[in-house]
Image (cartoon, rainbow over all chains, first blue to last red):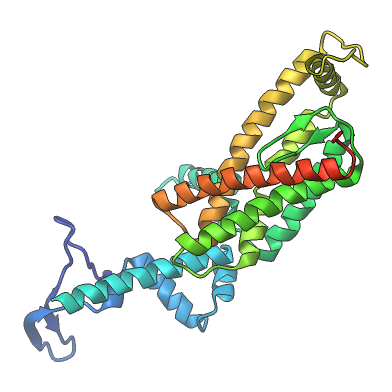
Length: 94
Length: 218
């Protein structure tokens, strides 16, 4: 299965979901759906977030796992938080 | 078949570059503090062997003899002045939470290039020429005779020292940016202001210490 793209490769705008499909019964749902905030992050940031949850939110554990220093990992988390806040603000504006 | 060798070489080069110019991606906190303090104290000890003084956050001067404790105190004052000033600066400009141990630890490790500076001026020729220059500047009779090769050691040592100071400033900036999560123009301007303030504070503190302990005539 391919990774879900969130940014348009042609104009760099945010992509939306137009169609959903049930693999079991082939039901198709059409419309215009927003991607959830987490799915709109880059693949690296999504992987980081997933790993962070798996580590029970321990930055020290994350730093050990990624072989990075504590502040580097904390800065990455802060950047993700900042991005999520911006995405949520954009959602509220719509 | 894909040739993975160039890719591996590029990755190794990138990691080496990161260790040289941004080691704080990999090491910070108490680890950096312990290694950094050890390097600082060894640097001061080696400095005492060639009368190399770190009499300011960025300063390296050779010449005047002093007891070992004075060399050790100088480097600790330099490290503490910059760490405290940058910590205060970060309280104003950083939007992130940060740990004090990261600021002090990474700033201690950022002073590691001075270890190479002090090794570059360890040869006696460099020290003799520095003493000769000092006697000329202070218009006193030279206490040592210099050899023709001494100037070469002195010039080579000075060039290495300048390069090491540039490397150290890069490391100090990276240490500040990573440990306090500051970026862009705000990071650069607050770092430059902090560096200037810390340089002035450290010079004043070391000058006062030398005066009060009788190492400098009042």
